Image 1 (cartoon, rainbow, N blue to C red):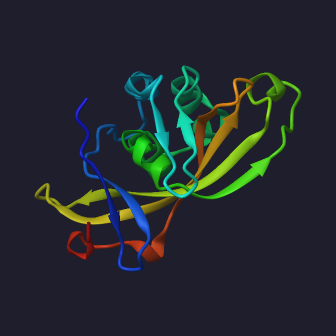
Image 2: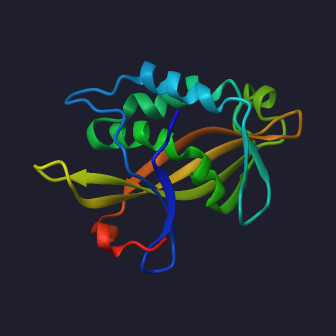
Length: 179
């Protein structure tokens, strides 16, 4: 699938994944089956985190977890649409991830999926807000926590994205961007 995604730097020097298309639209609810189907294109791919040089793999469990996690089911409105559309920029969000933080398994069942624990990284993405004529009026920037599992095969896999927060101080116009 073609993706209209770039990594930009904001005026403060922070990297943001700029997602220019809104693929997952809907007045009421996100069609999470479509998101799950979209995510299957990434399975068996891997991406390098620029800051740590670690490889992050996309396993076959990501599409289902991303679309059907407890966190996803609690999302409503703009946050649900932000997570759905963030799927387009996952490779770049992994590449610009920062703030590596390790966590031990909290539940016995995690010993199977994440034998060596979990890593949390932070990342950012921006989605366009369109004016009444279909032009881009501005971008909303979102902060996200990327949850990664360290599996028994000693690889790190993206598991889900969570804690999606709109950064109200970082709304920017399309002419504020540098690439």
